[in-house]
Length: 377
Image (tube, rainbow, N blue to C red; front, side):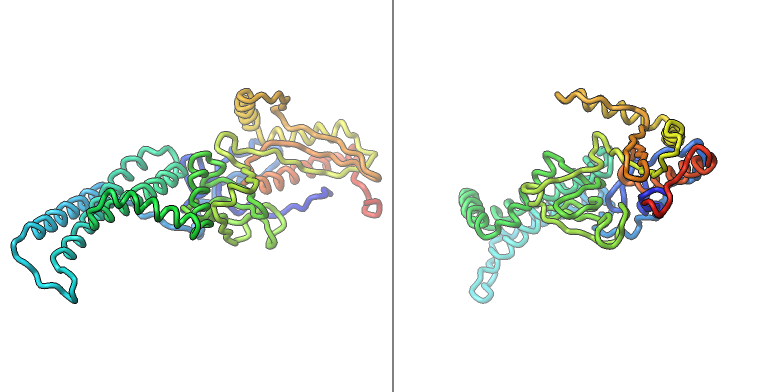
């Protein structure tokens, strides 16, 4: 009898804050409802639901691998030093000095191997201490960028042996790239902005421009979303499509984050249409009871968190910690809108369960709850 369509349960699995979707998005699990005639498995996890998510798979690396690469770098560096000090002269090849070329190649390989080893060691030390998979993803990207840039600079300096010229070259090259690669440069700046200001992170549900989805990957140049809704489906459920956005869009577009880290919840509304002959007091009370029984004390705890965040701002706002019902008058019927708090990735599932519970309660009292006739709607 309600105006909104009741669809299937949401496809994405929910996980704790310390977990992640493979390879990314993590979802908070809810508690199991305690009553109200609702399904017992309303909040049950689906551990394999996201196993086909695209995105890079970061293979685990150990510190031993890092130490091995550092050792390889040291050996290559010693080989380059021995060859540089050797008295034996090698004949040139196609007019290219063989000894200098081999020394330069060995030096570059030594620097690259040693830097990669250090990267692996630092990565394991820092990542092991990261509290969540989201933090691990961000740390990995930052370290990749920092060590990659440092390695490029060191290789250039070792090969050319012109450290002052290296600084001048970076200035000239940077000035040229500013004009030649504006969009990639803006995307890189956008990535730095995302890392520092954190408008969103891996696992968040966001809407950017005309795209909406769960953040799968935040790379140096692009952000990848697992689309929610869109042209394929009519509800807030995965469509199966992947959206790739340049990071530069965060510098010029609105970003809506539905599950930001400090408060990953949103308010939803559920609409039931009833006739004017309905006992509105009973109907409102029944809807609140079903929702309160389903959500339990979880909503109270989340509202307490919201109020703490609200106290840190100059905004004064009254927020109720229990579900509420608003009454809206229409021409031939009355709309009862239930307002409640829910995780955005579980909105459709919770709505379905609440619909079932409320309609079962209404149908059990046909003398007190009347539904509008089809010809009047």
